[in-house]
Length: 259
Ligand SMILES: [Zn+2]
Ligand SMILES: [Zn+2]
Image 1 (cartoon, rainbow, N blue to C red):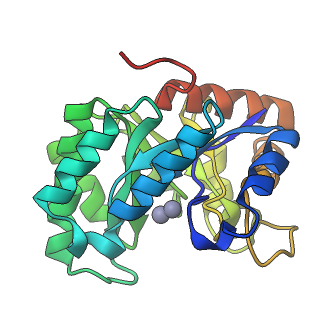
Image 2: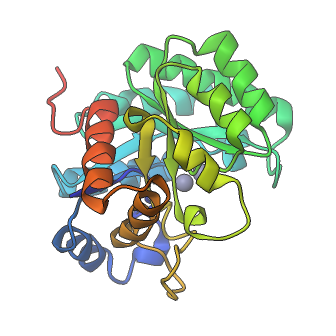
């Protein structure tokens, strides 16, 4: 059994066969998936999907850094409202993306802090997106998020950066398809992350893992990232499935009823 801790099942690329994709994942042993919203509309869509698939799909609510300019206090209020629903297990995804820089840096930073506040108020973990923005993310979390918990999703940094992330006690690292590719520092990071701080994800429909040749990623393919993680850590697939599932259940409270 595996948990895909990050999939955008609500996006239009799954419109033609969303139910089959979910069923395929379940039959293949990927029994639970977390769908984080990227703006108000997709947060709503993720919640609706979670309500339609209780115990299988769970939602996050938040505004992606690409869309940070769409965040207002009104949007924040509506996200908080949704976060009360038992199917919402995280605030996110949110973060800082200085690679594409689709929203100005200062706006991204302010919206990042607004999400930290929301996570604290709602007592939910954070799903954090980091791209070419490690130093700022760490600075803001050290200043405003030491009491929070969450995940650095699709971790893409080096060992030194991973150590800074892991120094924040409530946070985990999540590996996606890039772990299965050559030419990055991820194998080194995957070896050093403590067993109780690691998750796997697809970030589907993006980031198809090797050896798949598909043009679209889907939750079932998280298996390939888990297999790679097992190979790198010199352990079994079953052990990786066991630890990453236990970590996801603990972080997101999957299967526990909220009061
Ligand atoms: Zn992301
Ligand atoms: Zn994502």
